[in-house]
Structure formats: structure tokens, C-alpha cells
Image (cartoon, rainbow over all chains, first blue to last red; front, side):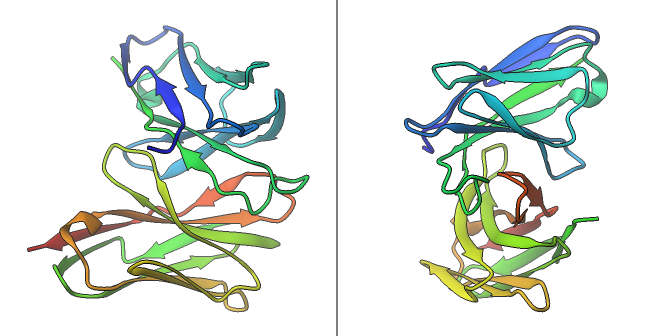
Amino acid sequence: DSGVTQTPKHLITATGQRVTLRCSPRSGDLSVYWYQQSLDQGLQFLIQYYNGEERAKGNILERFSAQQFPDLHSELNLSSLELGDSALYFCASSVELNSFGENNEQFFGPGTRLTVL
Amino acid sequence: KNQVEQSPQSLIILEGKNCTLQCNYTVSPFSNLRWYKQDTGRGPVSLTIMTFSENTKSNGRYTATLDADTKQSSLHITASQLSDSASYICVVSGRNQGGKLIFGQGTELSVKP
């Protein structure tokens, strides 16, 4: 158990809908990362938040957005869902070791499996 | 383009045998390289993390090596166990990229009795 929790574990929805995935980082971790893992692709970095502010952005679609709240939990919002959005979505957290967050170990949650029908 | 490539794509070995997985990267400037183990449908778990100044690091039966000059890394698994069956992912972090990680496609290892 990494200490990172994600809810829900599974989510089934229809195309065009909007969903929210939730992540609670390990106690004391200020940084939260979101990743997407599709069947035919490896893990893809989506976005990072540090202490409530966006720190880095990866291949995140405009239909997707995220935020980190004052209690440090984070939510990933996916809207206008398409079949291709079906994937495992992972959240990870870390303690920053320098101003750029380098050399930090990331601890991954168990993931949310999203199925878009 | 920053990339991480792993080989082989998949590997089947007998329980008790050793194996070595390879990783080549083009990420520059380089900050650190990690190896993760991911069981099917679960989150990745960190095995090792190495900076450019480290060329070997062990975690139990797992030993990772890093050659920052040739931009190559390997993960050696000794005396494999059935529980080692998983995907092993090489991940590279670039300098001044914040916490952004670049993932390889992984090597799917299957350990048979």
C-alpha cells in the first residue's frame, strides 16, 4: 500500500459525459501527478500540481482539467468523453526535494479504471 | 524528442533463473532514471532511482546499472520468483522538467514454474 488513495476504483460511463476522479496523496506529500495508461500505450504524464498550483503539464487534452485543493487532495475532470478516453488513470504523489522537484520518488495510487461506452 | 526505449518487449523465463532487461534513453539534460514494477491493473512500484553520478544500485534481488555516457540502463533480476511476473518500466526524468517523467513501454516478464 503506497498511501495514495484514488476513488472510484472503476467507472463506466457513456460518450459525451463528464466524470471526476479523485486522489488523496500520502500524508506530507505536497505534489500530485496524474497519468493515463491506455491498453496500447505506456504511462503518459498528464499534469502535476504542487501545493495547489499547476507545476508541469504533459499531454493533457483541453477536455481534461485538474485542480489541487487546500487539503492537498486533487481531482481530475474529464469531459465530453470519447471511446478513446477509456484507460487506467493513476495519481502519484511525492515530496519535493528541490525547487524543481527533481530526484523525488513518486508513489502511485491503485488507479481508476475508466470505461467509456 | 525525449524518448525511452526498452527491450525486450516481453520475456519468459523459468523460476530460479536470472534475467536482464535493457533501457536506452535520449532524454537530455538528464536528471535521474528509475525502474518501476507494475503488476497487471495496479499502480507502478518504485524499485530503484539513480542520478547521473550513480552507476549501480540494488534492491534485494534487483540490481540496476546506469551508463550516463551511453545513455543506457539495465535491470538485472537474480533467482527469479513467480511473483516477479509483471511489467518492468524504465522511467527517465529530465533536468529542469519538474516532476515530469518519461516512461518506456515496459518489458512484460513472465516467470514460469
